[in-house]
Image (cartoon, rainbow, N blue to C red; front, side, top):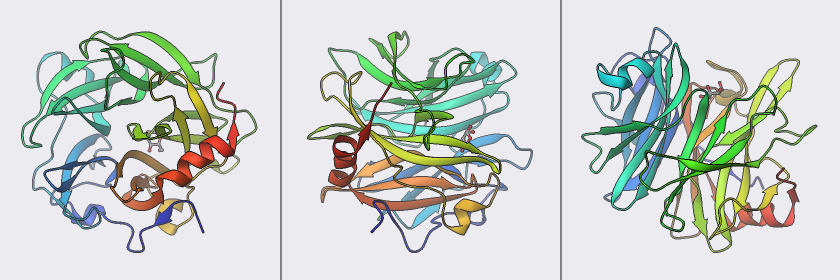
Length: 309
Ligand code: BMA
């Protein structure tokens, strides 16, 4: 029995269900809002640059895409400069009665993390660009620690394999106390680079971090998902990192597409029955979902772990 059970009717969304012209629908942040599942997904436009669309669902499986995109590159101000090449890979965190949305902002100056917020998923307000270049995969914890917001992200480095860092902020604008907390493991499925995936999920035994890891082969890179567990009161402390991946490209819609051999998650929704719905982009082309028992994922981090650094 696989640890993540794929929904039998995957993919749950393809570009054919998007009512405006796009090549793909993938890498979506998902959350619950007013008894509905809200999905903010990335789409490649036909010029290869990305925008963010919105879909909603009553059950987390059957989604309907809104007529208009949710977030497209800004047309004025500082955001215009840094979003020129597109907005990608949104993550959603509910904290203090608002939904924070982090996304990758691409421009001729590199990739930075944009931060926006919404309270109703109708209007959206950009707050700040919270990293320099080159950072991707920023996720914000749904709780504060000692009065500070906390985030995980993945800066690019030429010296160190691309790793997961933590930073803190009193106001979502100024971030600091940055620290590398988890590295790829050499000669392992995530040896090339890792990055945060879904915003961390609180469990009785720690914060569950569903991350992605990349392995380079003669046939190109393979993107898989893994899990790590962070201490509940000090999330810079990693209790354990699962030694095995929890999901790898296996189905046709994950093996071939816009980018072959990719499962990439930006969102997971914990349910009251102890399961979690994990959402992932298949081959950077379609959206997929599967379920896992949260306890199984936590057990993997604790009982079958590898070192974090
Ligand atoms: C990463 C990002 C992701 C993408 C993945 C596979 O570098 O661009 O958005 O899903 O590559 O192409």
